[in-house]
Length: 329
Image (cartoon, rainbow, N blue to C red; front, top):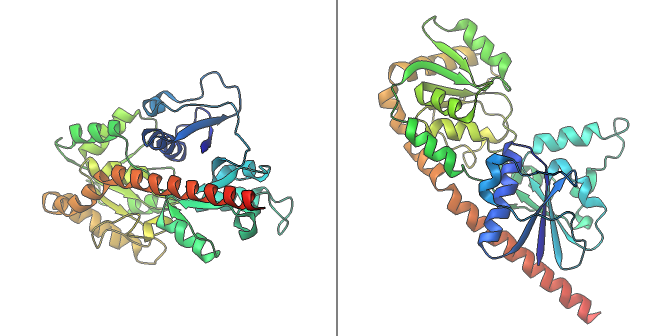
């Protein structure tokens, strides 16, 4: 069985990293795995930060009965033209799929080149990075295997190095999401609270900020299992989030009770501010409550390798069944 994983060249985000982790795990488990970057022919497609995964590469996918092609949901149309290979869609973000599918419709209500993956007759194999995605697929009448991800060793080591830093009354946040609600919090907050956005920073600077911050907040969309809340927890932050997307599921974001708030509710701002002020004042007593979450994060690599093994063994069994049917025909 030859497995090719489609991935955008040079892109450094959580989705492409999960695809690199998949190829790395498959290679370590002894499978014939390769990354196929797009656009084809890029002279240096593997981002430097992902070279640690040492992916084998191929110029193009193999569309044969004994091959498997895996694509993320945002590149689903790349699977449409395959005639022989087993097609696998990795659902890294339900929200991104919806956006891409709608943007690809020539007019509202028209067919989209993304629609075919939800048609059971197309026999696409689905894997979900989050419980949020798995349940959304179940609502569409589709089963999915779990294929999550993990925080790479470099980030874990950096978090461990800064975790003993002196904590300050800093609330760190990601300005790329939930900014309207964060601004409402900032406008109503006491003057002593320092709000620091995570932007225009190197990974080392991000870890340094999280190491000094007592609180990290993350509101707005959670399209999948986001990395920054996990990194913040490893750096010792008290993590406070919303309940949209994957944040609603404890399988994806197992925070202690009382640290998730629905920012769409009328009283959300005062409730969240009260929790933030408590976290800043009583940080030493609240931080240990996040130890189970940190342990859960630390165990994700092992879980991921188990998931990859189940996925590849399932695909092998599927190909054997197809070969048997062809031989009997």
